[in-house]
Image (cartoon, rainbow, N blue to C red; front, side, top):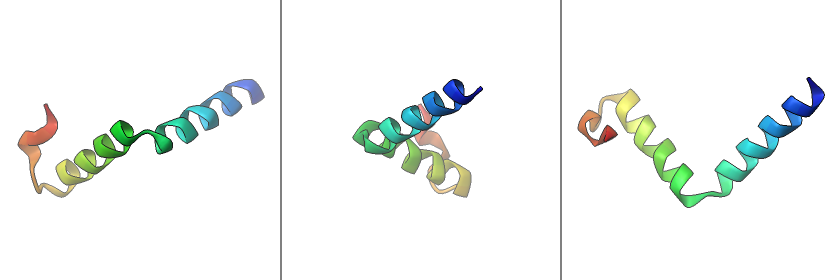
Length: 41
């Protein structure tokens, strides 16, 4: 369990440093907010 938790933390850390992941997160926020739902693709 500890190893899996560490892996998840590492993945989250890597994702937070990835421009592409950051852009995906911003797009997800737009979708959630209903700003541009068609940009999901």
